[in-house]
Length: 174
Image (cartoon, rainbow, N blue to C red; front, side, top):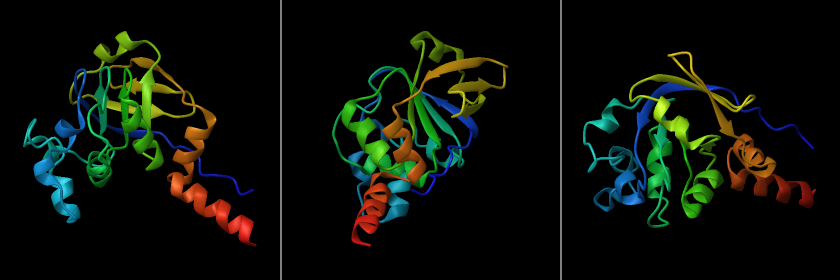
């Protein structure tokens, strides 16, 4: 079987949120659209309309408990991906949000020690190292993260669940 892509470190700024950030906060219903630019612009719009234009590719979301709670609509995941959010690091995630993010190859990683989330400041430069499962900050903090299971990592490396399923189908039809 072909070797999957490694998970390379990602670097960007931290956008810090609290507990119970729901999918309507991440991407409000007023931005549901088939137009990708509309979906992209909706990211956190009702929370702070100036946030989305300030995001640059590689930035990461830092969250508290129950990140992504609420509806199961994938527009929140699509908006995060369209804005090229590199990863979300939180205390924990709503199950359906985590599954949807994983299926779309958006890494969602939990803090090994939930108290460490308070060590990250808004706007701070951070790097997520997938080899050591460590979040490094520009203040020289090294924060341990909880590595997800091997299958989740495989989905991320493949570029999403559909990529794995497509490869299996091609292998079996040979």
